[in-house]
Image (cartoon, rainbow, N blue to C red):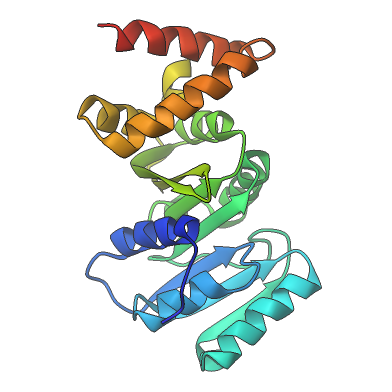
Length: 231
């Protein structure tokens, strides 16, 4: 079985939850880098087939080689492309975009929605793990017709990461700055006493105290969080 880092293990767990009891799904890993996540999905029978995309040749070759070495050449395709460009989505797909900046994730989703249409998006699950600009990703999702299904956090080599699972229903909504910066799902878990989320929020508070000087969204979120946390 393919071993994964703590961060990718968290992403994999969200894929498993998205798959549920369904087998043989198609999983698309955007920015697959080394292909390990795709290999793991095939190892555990969650995926019947995988697609890996990379914008550069070198990481695409690494993913292709990893899949071939694991015996999955016939179950996989690797494309050198920008995001999901040229990869039509299908009903039941699980799209994974992990390990890249939030603005890149927003751009990929925006173009994919335009290319595929809302009727397909409504039947696709998205597993997203932004490395930065998380608040912008959450604002984009809520304002563009996505809904938050779940979100988890982990600490990998002293660095905190979050991973969200989202669906699409076409209903645009508004989230507060606090929800954008801390996450609507994570706020509920925090209020229910989730210790991992509490550690993550403490980490965010330290970062936001610095970022609030130049970021009005963060400043508002931090003020709101401190108010709600004191209730």
